[in-house]
Length: 511
Image 1: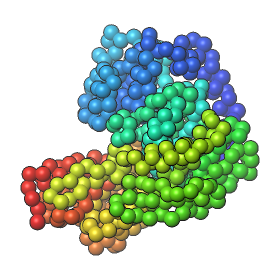
Image 2 (image 1 turned 90 degrees about the vertical axis):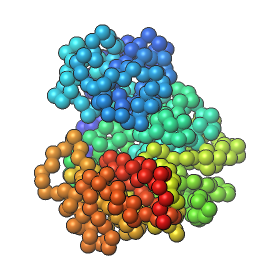
Image 3 (image 1 turned 135 degrees about the vertical axis):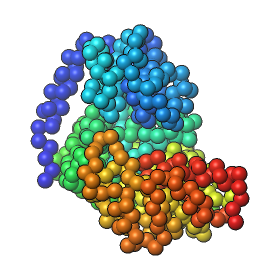
Image 4 (image 1 turned 30 degrees about the vertical axis):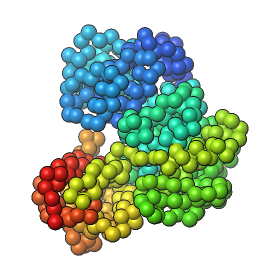
Protein backbone atom coordinates (compact mmCIF):
# COMPACT_ATOMS: atom_id res chain seq x y z
CA UNK A 1 0.00 0.00 0.00
CA UNK A 2 2.85 2.39 0.84
CA UNK A 3 5.24 2.65 -2.09
CA UNK A 4 8.37 4.72 -1.70
CA UNK A 5 9.84 3.20 -4.87
CA UNK A 6 12.96 4.83 -6.32
CA UNK A 7 12.31 8.13 -4.60
CA UNK A 8 15.74 8.18 -2.94
CA UNK A 9 17.52 7.58 -6.26
CA UNK A 10 15.41 10.17 -8.03
CA UNK A 11 15.98 12.64 -5.20
CA UNK A 12 19.75 12.20 -5.48
CA UNK A 13 19.57 12.74 -9.25
CA UNK A 14 17.57 15.93 -8.75
CA UNK A 15 20.11 17.12 -6.20
CA UNK A 16 22.90 16.45 -8.68
CA UNK A 17 21.10 18.51 -11.32
CA UNK A 18 20.79 21.36 -8.84
CA UNK A 19 24.44 21.20 -7.90
CA UNK A 20 25.36 21.64 -11.56
CA UNK A 21 22.99 24.62 -11.70
CA UNK A 22 24.56 26.11 -8.56
CA UNK A 23 27.97 26.27 -10.23
CA UNK A 24 26.52 28.83 -12.62
CA UNK A 25 24.24 30.62 -10.18
CA UNK A 26 26.01 32.78 -7.60
CA UNK A 27 22.72 33.85 -6.05
CA UNK A 28 21.76 30.31 -5.03
CA UNK A 29 25.24 29.55 -3.71
CA UNK A 30 25.00 32.78 -1.69
CA UNK A 31 21.63 31.77 -0.33
CA UNK A 32 22.93 28.37 0.70
CA UNK A 33 26.02 29.77 2.40
CA UNK A 34 24.14 32.70 3.97
CA UNK A 35 26.70 35.21 2.70
CA UNK A 36 25.95 38.91 2.52
CA UNK A 37 23.26 39.35 -0.14
CA UNK A 38 23.50 43.14 -0.29
CA UNK A 39 24.42 43.05 -3.99
CA UNK A 40 21.70 40.59 -4.95
CA UNK A 41 18.29 41.45 -6.43
CA UNK A 42 15.44 38.97 -6.12
CA UNK A 43 12.15 39.39 -7.99
CA UNK A 44 9.17 37.56 -6.49
CA UNK A 45 6.19 36.71 -8.69
CA UNK A 46 3.05 36.42 -6.55
CA UNK A 47 4.74 38.18 -3.65
CA UNK A 48 1.55 38.81 -1.65
CA UNK A 49 1.09 35.14 -0.88
CA UNK A 50 1.69 34.44 2.80
CA UNK A 51 4.67 32.15 2.26
CA UNK A 52 6.14 34.43 -0.38
CA UNK A 53 5.86 37.49 1.87
CA UNK A 54 7.53 35.54 4.69
CA UNK A 55 10.35 34.50 2.36
CA UNK A 56 10.73 38.14 1.30
CA UNK A 57 11.17 39.09 4.96
CA UNK A 58 13.98 36.56 5.32
CA UNK A 59 15.75 37.63 2.11
CA UNK A 60 15.57 41.30 3.10
CA UNK A 61 17.03 40.42 6.51
CA UNK A 62 19.97 38.81 4.66
CA UNK A 63 20.56 42.09 2.81
CA UNK A 64 18.97 41.28 -0.56
CA UNK A 65 17.08 43.83 -2.63
CA UNK A 66 13.59 42.36 -3.05
CA UNK A 67 10.78 43.50 -5.31
CA UNK A 68 7.90 41.72 -6.93
CA UNK A 69 4.44 41.72 -8.37
CA UNK A 70 0.94 40.45 -7.70
CA UNK A 71 -2.75 41.21 -8.22
CA UNK A 72 -4.06 44.64 -7.25
CA UNK A 73 -6.35 43.31 -4.48
CA UNK A 74 -5.19 44.27 -1.02
CA UNK A 75 -4.19 41.58 1.49
CA UNK A 76 -2.79 41.76 5.01
CA UNK A 77 0.61 40.92 3.53
CA UNK A 78 0.61 44.35 1.84
CA UNK A 79 1.33 45.88 5.25
CA UNK A 80 4.07 43.31 5.94
CA UNK A 81 5.80 44.06 2.63
CA UNK A 82 5.44 47.81 3.05
CA UNK A 83 7.04 47.61 6.50
CA UNK A 84 10.19 46.00 5.08
CA UNK A 85 10.38 48.38 2.13
CA UNK A 86 9.55 46.00 -0.71
CA UNK A 87 8.39 47.47 -4.03
CA UNK A 88 5.20 45.62 -5.07
CA UNK A 89 4.02 46.14 -8.65
CA UNK A 90 0.38 45.54 -9.55
CA UNK A 91 -1.28 44.03 -11.45
CA UNK A 92 0.74 41.33 -13.21
CA UNK A 93 2.13 42.71 -16.46
CA UNK A 94 5.11 42.28 -18.77
CA UNK A 95 5.67 46.00 -18.19
CA UNK A 96 6.63 45.22 -14.58
CA UNK A 97 9.79 43.55 -15.87
CA UNK A 98 10.97 46.61 -17.80
CA UNK A 99 14.20 48.06 -16.42
CA UNK A 100 14.59 45.24 -13.87
CA UNK A 101 17.52 42.83 -14.01
CA UNK A 102 17.13 40.40 -11.11
CA UNK A 103 19.66 37.74 -10.25
CA UNK A 104 16.83 35.36 -9.39
CA UNK A 105 13.07 35.12 -9.84
CA UNK A 106 11.11 33.23 -7.19
CA UNK A 107 7.55 32.41 -8.20
CA UNK A 108 4.40 31.25 -6.45
CA UNK A 109 3.34 27.80 -7.63
CA UNK A 110 -0.08 29.28 -8.45
CA UNK A 111 1.48 30.71 -11.61
CA UNK A 112 3.25 29.40 -14.69
CA UNK A 113 3.92 30.49 -18.26
CA UNK A 114 0.44 29.41 -19.33
CA UNK A 115 -1.53 31.58 -16.90
CA UNK A 116 0.83 34.50 -16.23
CA UNK A 117 2.42 36.70 -18.87
CA UNK A 118 5.11 37.92 -16.49
CA UNK A 119 6.23 34.36 -15.79
CA UNK A 120 6.52 33.76 -19.51
CA UNK A 121 8.62 36.93 -19.88
CA UNK A 122 11.07 35.94 -17.14
CA UNK A 123 11.40 32.49 -18.64
CA UNK A 124 12.05 34.02 -22.07
CA UNK A 125 14.84 36.11 -20.57
CA UNK A 126 16.44 32.94 -19.12
CA UNK A 127 16.64 34.44 -15.63
CA UNK A 128 17.22 31.71 -12.97
CA UNK A 129 13.78 30.62 -11.73
CA UNK A 130 12.87 28.90 -8.48
CA UNK A 131 9.43 28.06 -7.13
CA UNK A 132 8.63 29.14 -3.58
CA UNK A 133 8.99 25.55 -2.39
CA UNK A 134 12.35 25.11 -4.14
CA UNK A 135 13.63 28.34 -2.61
CA UNK A 136 12.46 27.23 0.82
CA UNK A 137 14.24 23.94 0.23
CA UNK A 138 17.48 25.68 -0.68
CA UNK A 139 17.29 27.77 2.48
CA UNK A 140 16.85 24.59 4.52
CA UNK A 141 19.93 22.80 3.20
CA UNK A 142 22.78 24.62 4.89
CA UNK A 143 21.41 24.88 8.41
CA UNK A 144 19.75 22.69 11.02
CA UNK A 145 16.21 22.71 9.65
CA UNK A 146 12.93 21.48 11.08
CA UNK A 147 9.69 21.07 9.13
CA UNK A 148 6.25 21.39 10.73
CA UNK A 149 3.75 19.27 8.80
CA UNK A 150 0.26 17.82 9.01
CA UNK A 151 -3.22 18.29 7.58
CA UNK A 152 -4.20 20.39 10.61
CA UNK A 153 -2.35 22.69 12.98
CA UNK A 154 0.79 23.51 10.98
CA UNK A 155 0.57 27.27 11.19
CA UNK A 156 -0.37 27.46 14.86
CA UNK A 157 2.29 24.94 15.88
CA UNK A 158 5.00 26.75 13.91
CA UNK A 159 3.96 30.09 15.41
CA UNK A 160 4.11 28.59 18.91
CA UNK A 161 7.61 27.24 18.24
CA UNK A 162 8.71 30.68 17.06
CA UNK A 163 7.16 32.42 20.07
CA UNK A 164 8.95 30.09 22.49
CA UNK A 165 12.27 30.36 20.64
CA UNK A 166 11.95 34.14 20.71
CA UNK A 167 11.48 34.01 24.49
CA UNK A 168 14.61 31.83 24.70
CA UNK A 169 16.57 34.20 22.41
CA UNK A 170 17.41 31.07 20.45
CA UNK A 171 19.58 31.28 17.32
CA UNK A 172 16.87 30.56 14.75
CA UNK A 173 14.71 31.82 11.93
CA UNK A 174 11.07 30.68 11.90
CA UNK A 175 8.70 30.93 8.91
CA UNK A 176 4.94 30.55 9.33
CA UNK A 177 1.99 30.45 6.97
CA UNK A 178 0.28 33.50 8.45
CA UNK A 179 0.92 36.71 10.34
CA UNK A 180 1.70 36.10 14.02
CA UNK A 181 0.86 38.55 16.79
CA UNK A 182 3.98 37.62 18.75
CA UNK A 183 6.09 38.39 15.66
CA UNK A 184 4.72 41.96 15.58
CA UNK A 185 2.33 40.98 12.78
CA UNK A 186 5.06 39.47 10.61
CA UNK A 187 5.11 35.95 9.20
CA UNK A 188 8.65 35.31 10.43
CA UNK A 189 10.72 35.37 13.59
CA UNK A 190 14.32 36.12 12.64
CA UNK A 191 16.84 35.74 15.45
CA UNK A 192 19.76 33.92 13.84
CA UNK A 193 20.78 31.73 10.93
CA UNK A 194 21.99 28.40 12.30
CA UNK A 195 18.56 26.88 12.96
CA UNK A 196 15.54 27.09 10.67
CA UNK A 197 11.95 26.08 11.48
CA UNK A 198 9.36 26.28 8.70
CA UNK A 199 5.78 25.32 8.04
CA UNK A 200 5.91 22.78 5.20
CA UNK A 201 2.92 22.04 2.98
CA UNK A 202 1.74 18.63 1.79
CA UNK A 203 -0.22 19.90 -1.23
CA UNK A 204 1.26 18.50 -4.45
CA UNK A 205 4.10 17.11 -2.31
CA UNK A 206 5.60 20.59 -1.95
CA UNK A 207 7.31 19.54 1.28
CA UNK A 208 9.53 17.11 -0.64
CA UNK A 209 11.71 20.12 -1.58
CA UNK A 210 12.56 20.64 2.11
CA UNK A 211 15.61 19.13 3.86
CA UNK A 212 14.58 18.47 7.48
CA UNK A 213 16.65 17.26 10.40
CA UNK A 214 13.50 17.01 12.51
CA UNK A 215 9.82 16.85 11.53
CA UNK A 216 6.68 17.60 13.52
CA UNK A 217 3.74 15.55 12.22
CA UNK A 218 0.44 16.79 13.67
CA UNK A 219 -2.09 14.79 11.66
CA UNK A 220 -2.86 12.87 8.49
CA UNK A 221 -6.30 12.32 6.99
CA UNK A 222 -7.99 12.70 3.62
CA UNK A 223 -7.67 16.22 2.20
CA UNK A 224 -6.75 17.99 -1.06
CA UNK A 225 -8.86 15.44 -2.91
CA UNK A 226 -8.10 17.13 -6.24
CA UNK A 227 -4.52 15.86 -5.86
CA UNK A 228 -4.86 13.00 -3.34
CA UNK A 229 -8.02 11.08 -4.34
CA UNK A 230 -7.61 8.55 -1.51
CA UNK A 231 -6.30 8.49 2.03
CA UNK A 232 -3.57 6.10 0.91
CA UNK A 233 -2.34 8.75 -1.56
CA UNK A 234 -1.87 11.46 1.05
CA UNK A 235 -0.43 8.98 3.58
CA UNK A 236 2.17 7.94 1.01
CA UNK A 237 3.17 11.58 0.49
CA UNK A 238 3.77 12.07 4.21
CA UNK A 239 5.75 8.82 4.30
CA UNK A 240 7.95 10.15 1.52
CA UNK A 241 8.51 13.33 3.49
CA UNK A 242 9.53 11.45 6.64
CA UNK A 243 11.91 9.36 4.52
CA UNK A 244 13.85 12.57 3.82
CA UNK A 245 15.05 12.65 7.42
CA UNK A 246 18.76 11.83 7.67
CA UNK A 247 20.15 9.03 9.80
CA UNK A 248 19.20 9.66 13.44
CA UNK A 249 16.76 12.37 12.36
CA UNK A 250 13.71 12.84 14.58
CA UNK A 251 9.97 12.47 14.01
CA UNK A 252 7.84 14.27 16.61
CA UNK A 253 4.34 12.89 16.00
CA UNK A 254 0.89 13.15 17.55
CA UNK A 255 0.02 9.83 19.19
CA UNK A 256 -3.63 10.95 19.42
CA UNK A 257 -3.95 11.15 15.64
CA UNK A 258 -4.63 7.87 13.83
CA UNK A 259 -2.93 8.95 10.59
CA UNK A 260 0.22 10.32 12.25
CA UNK A 261 0.52 7.18 14.39
CA UNK A 262 0.03 4.95 11.36
CA UNK A 263 2.79 6.76 9.47
CA UNK A 264 5.15 6.39 12.44
CA UNK A 265 4.47 2.63 12.59
CA UNK A 266 5.11 2.15 8.88
CA UNK A 267 8.28 4.23 8.93
CA UNK A 268 9.69 2.44 11.95
CA UNK A 269 9.78 -0.82 10.00
CA UNK A 270 12.00 0.69 7.29
CA UNK A 271 13.83 3.42 9.27
CA UNK A 272 14.58 2.10 12.78
CA UNK A 273 17.51 4.54 12.83
CA UNK A 274 15.14 7.47 13.34
CA UNK A 275 14.22 8.91 16.73
CA UNK A 276 10.46 8.64 17.32
CA UNK A 277 9.04 11.15 19.82
CA UNK A 278 5.28 10.82 20.45
CA UNK A 279 3.17 13.50 22.10
CA UNK A 280 -0.45 13.71 23.21
CA UNK A 281 -2.82 12.09 25.68
CA UNK A 282 -2.14 8.64 24.18
CA UNK A 283 1.65 9.10 24.17
CA UNK A 284 4.18 7.39 26.36
CA UNK A 285 7.15 9.38 27.61
CA UNK A 286 7.82 12.91 28.72
CA UNK A 287 5.40 14.59 26.28
CA UNK A 288 2.30 12.69 27.44
CA UNK A 289 -0.47 15.26 28.03
CA UNK A 290 -2.39 15.21 31.30
CA UNK A 291 -4.85 17.29 33.33
CA UNK A 292 -6.27 19.61 30.66
CA UNK A 293 -8.51 22.22 32.27
CA UNK A 294 -10.22 25.46 31.23
CA UNK A 295 -10.78 28.33 33.65
CA UNK A 296 -10.76 32.13 33.54
CA UNK A 297 -10.25 32.25 29.78
CA UNK A 298 -7.15 30.07 29.87
CA UNK A 299 -6.26 26.43 29.34
CA UNK A 300 -3.84 24.63 31.60
CA UNK A 301 -2.23 21.23 31.12
CA UNK A 302 0.71 19.22 32.35
CA UNK A 303 3.24 16.90 30.73
CA UNK A 304 4.59 13.67 32.22
CA UNK A 305 8.23 14.69 31.93
CA UNK A 306 7.96 18.14 33.52
CA UNK A 307 6.80 19.37 36.91
CA UNK A 308 4.06 21.99 37.08
CA UNK A 309 1.53 23.31 34.59
CA UNK A 310 1.70 24.98 31.21
CA UNK A 311 -0.77 27.77 30.35
CA UNK A 312 -2.35 28.65 27.02
CA UNK A 313 -4.62 31.62 26.29
CA UNK A 314 -6.35 30.30 23.16
CA UNK A 315 -9.24 27.80 23.08
CA UNK A 316 -9.41 24.17 22.03
CA UNK A 317 -7.89 20.87 23.14
CA UNK A 318 -6.39 20.62 19.67
CA UNK A 319 -4.32 23.69 20.54
CA UNK A 320 -3.06 21.94 23.68
CA UNK A 321 -1.72 19.27 21.33
CA UNK A 322 -0.21 21.92 19.05
CA UNK A 323 1.43 23.53 22.08
CA UNK A 324 2.81 20.18 23.21
CA UNK A 325 4.33 19.60 19.76
CA UNK A 326 5.95 23.04 19.96
CA UNK A 327 7.32 22.29 23.44
CA UNK A 328 8.69 18.93 22.27
CA UNK A 329 10.53 20.42 19.29
CA UNK A 330 11.89 23.28 21.35
CA UNK A 331 13.17 20.90 24.03
CA UNK A 332 14.89 18.75 21.39
CA UNK A 333 16.48 21.82 19.78
CA UNK A 334 17.82 22.97 23.14
CA UNK A 335 19.25 19.53 23.76
CA UNK A 336 20.82 19.51 20.32
CA UNK A 337 22.43 22.92 20.81
CA UNK A 338 23.35 22.77 24.51
CA UNK A 339 23.43 19.05 25.25
CA UNK A 340 20.98 19.44 28.13
CA UNK A 341 17.91 21.30 29.35
CA UNK A 342 18.10 23.76 32.25
CA UNK A 343 15.47 24.82 34.76
CA UNK A 344 15.75 28.31 33.30
CA UNK A 345 15.00 26.91 29.83
CA UNK A 346 11.79 25.29 31.08
CA UNK A 347 10.74 28.54 32.72
CA UNK A 348 11.20 30.43 29.46
CA UNK A 349 9.28 27.75 27.53
CA UNK A 350 6.37 28.21 29.97
CA UNK A 351 6.58 32.00 29.64
CA UNK A 352 6.72 31.92 25.84
CA UNK A 353 3.68 29.68 25.62
CA UNK A 354 1.75 31.75 28.16
CA UNK A 355 2.50 34.90 26.12
CA UNK A 356 1.33 33.33 22.83
CA UNK A 357 -1.43 35.51 21.35
CA UNK A 358 -2.37 33.60 18.23
CA UNK A 359 -2.17 33.76 14.46
CA UNK A 360 -4.19 35.71 11.94
CA UNK A 361 -7.33 33.77 10.97
CA UNK A 362 -6.70 31.09 13.64
CA UNK A 363 -9.14 31.77 16.51
CA UNK A 364 -8.43 35.43 15.81
CA UNK A 365 -10.31 37.96 17.91
CA UNK A 366 -11.44 40.56 15.37
CA UNK A 367 -13.17 42.90 17.81
CA UNK A 368 -16.12 43.44 20.13
CA UNK A 369 -19.15 45.69 19.81
CA UNK A 370 -22.59 45.75 21.37
CA UNK A 371 -21.47 43.05 23.78
CA UNK A 372 -20.79 40.66 20.88
CA UNK A 373 -17.36 39.08 20.46
CA UNK A 374 -16.20 38.64 16.85
CA UNK A 375 -13.85 35.79 15.92
CA UNK A 376 -12.41 34.58 12.63
CA UNK A 377 -10.96 31.14 11.98
CA UNK A 378 -9.44 29.43 8.94
CA UNK A 379 -10.86 25.95 9.73
CA UNK A 380 -12.12 24.48 6.45
CA UNK A 381 -11.90 20.71 6.99
CA UNK A 382 -14.64 18.88 8.96
CA UNK A 383 -12.20 17.66 11.61
CA UNK A 384 -10.81 21.16 12.15
CA UNK A 385 -14.29 22.71 12.20
CA UNK A 386 -15.55 20.28 14.82
CA UNK A 387 -12.47 20.68 17.04
CA UNK A 388 -12.45 24.47 16.73
CA UNK A 389 -16.14 24.89 17.55
CA UNK A 390 -15.83 22.49 20.49
CA UNK A 391 -12.97 24.65 21.77
CA UNK A 392 -15.05 27.82 21.45
CA UNK A 393 -18.01 26.19 23.23
CA UNK A 394 -15.74 25.15 26.09
CA UNK A 395 -14.03 28.55 26.25
CA UNK A 396 -17.31 30.51 26.11
CA UNK A 397 -19.75 28.09 27.82
CA UNK A 398 -22.53 30.58 28.51
CA UNK A 399 -22.48 32.40 25.19
CA UNK A 400 -24.47 31.66 22.03
CA UNK A 401 -22.28 30.78 19.04
CA UNK A 402 -23.47 32.23 15.72
CA UNK A 403 -21.33 30.79 12.91
CA UNK A 404 -20.96 31.67 9.23
CA UNK A 405 -19.13 29.03 7.19
CA UNK A 406 -17.92 29.23 3.60
CA UNK A 407 -16.77 25.86 2.17
CA UNK A 408 -13.52 25.79 0.20
CA UNK A 409 -13.02 23.77 -3.02
CA UNK A 410 -15.61 21.67 -4.78
CA UNK A 411 -13.52 18.52 -4.52
CA UNK A 412 -13.15 18.73 -0.72
CA UNK A 413 -16.85 19.52 -0.25
CA UNK A 414 -17.90 16.62 -2.47
CA UNK A 415 -15.52 14.07 -0.94
CA UNK A 416 -16.32 14.98 2.68
CA UNK A 417 -19.95 16.03 2.32
CA UNK A 418 -21.33 13.79 5.07
CA UNK A 419 -18.52 14.77 7.43
CA UNK A 420 -19.19 18.46 6.81
CA UNK A 421 -22.90 17.95 7.46
CA UNK A 422 -22.21 16.69 10.98
CA UNK A 423 -19.36 19.06 11.90
CA UNK A 424 -21.41 22.01 13.22
CA UNK A 425 -23.15 20.54 16.27
CA UNK A 426 -21.65 23.18 18.61
CA UNK A 427 -22.99 26.10 16.55
CA UNK A 428 -26.23 27.48 17.99
CA UNK A 429 -27.01 29.35 14.75
CA UNK A 430 -25.36 28.42 11.45
CA UNK A 431 -25.18 30.31 8.15
CA UNK A 432 -23.74 28.65 5.05
CA UNK A 433 -22.37 30.34 1.92
CA UNK A 434 -21.50 29.25 -1.60
CA UNK A 435 -18.36 27.22 -2.22
CA UNK A 436 -15.25 29.38 -2.47
CA UNK A 437 -13.65 28.14 -5.67
CA UNK A 438 -9.97 27.37 -6.11
CA UNK A 439 -8.04 28.18 -9.27
CA UNK A 440 -6.45 24.74 -9.05
CA UNK A 441 -9.66 22.82 -9.86
CA UNK A 442 -12.66 22.82 -12.17
CA UNK A 443 -16.24 22.49 -10.99
CA UNK A 444 -17.88 19.38 -12.43
CA UNK A 445 -21.30 20.70 -11.41
CA UNK A 446 -22.10 17.84 -9.03
CA UNK A 447 -21.93 19.87 -5.82
CA UNK A 448 -22.48 23.45 -4.69
CA UNK A 449 -23.23 25.39 -1.53
CA UNK A 450 -26.90 24.47 -1.61
CA UNK A 451 -25.95 20.79 -1.76
CA UNK A 452 -24.13 21.18 1.55
CA UNK A 453 -27.03 23.21 2.96
CA UNK A 454 -29.42 20.37 2.13
CA UNK A 455 -27.20 17.87 3.94
CA UNK A 456 -26.61 20.05 7.00
CA UNK A 457 -30.36 20.60 7.51
CA UNK A 458 -30.68 16.92 8.42
CA UNK A 459 -28.45 17.43 11.45
CA UNK A 460 -28.81 21.08 12.43
CA UNK A 461 -32.09 22.72 13.43
CA UNK A 462 -31.14 26.34 12.88
CA UNK A 463 -29.26 26.71 9.59
CA UNK A 464 -29.72 29.30 6.82
CA UNK A 465 -28.18 29.77 3.39
CA UNK A 466 -26.90 32.97 1.78
CA UNK A 467 -24.77 32.36 -1.30
CA UNK A 468 -22.92 35.67 -0.91
CA UNK A 469 -21.62 36.25 2.62
CA UNK A 470 -22.41 39.98 2.73
CA UNK A 471 -26.04 39.24 1.82
CA UNK A 472 -26.36 37.71 5.29
CA UNK A 473 -25.49 40.96 7.09
CA UNK A 474 -29.02 41.92 8.18
CA UNK A 475 -29.88 38.33 9.09
CA UNK A 476 -26.82 38.05 11.31
CA UNK A 477 -27.69 41.34 13.01
CA UNK A 478 -31.17 39.98 13.72
CA UNK A 479 -29.69 36.90 15.42
CA UNK A 480 -27.16 38.62 17.67
CA UNK A 481 -27.64 39.73 21.25
CA UNK A 482 -25.23 41.10 23.80
CA UNK A 483 -23.14 38.25 25.15
CA UNK A 484 -23.11 36.28 21.87
CA UNK A 485 -20.08 35.23 19.83
CA UNK A 486 -20.06 35.61 16.04
CA UNK A 487 -17.57 33.45 14.17
CA UNK A 488 -16.65 33.55 10.50
CA UNK A 489 -15.07 30.26 9.53
CA UNK A 490 -13.44 28.86 6.40
CA UNK A 491 -10.69 29.52 3.86
CA UNK A 492 -12.81 31.81 1.70
CA UNK A 493 -13.55 35.54 1.90
CA UNK A 494 -16.52 35.39 4.29
CA UNK A 495 -14.32 37.10 6.88
CA UNK A 496 -15.65 40.26 5.23
CA UNK A 497 -19.06 39.51 6.75
CA UNK A 498 -17.62 39.62 10.26
CA UNK A 499 -16.02 43.00 9.58
CA UNK A 500 -19.24 44.36 8.07
CA UNK A 501 -21.40 43.30 11.02
CA UNK A 502 -18.82 44.57 13.50
CA UNK A 503 -18.79 47.99 11.83
CA UNK A 504 -22.58 48.20 11.99
CA UNK A 505 -22.63 47.27 15.67
CA UNK A 506 -19.96 49.84 16.43
CA UNK A 507 -22.47 52.54 15.47
CA UNK A 508 -25.61 50.89 16.84
CA UNK A 509 -26.62 49.11 20.02
CA UNK A 510 -28.42 45.79 19.98
CA UNK A 511 -30.86 44.46 22.60
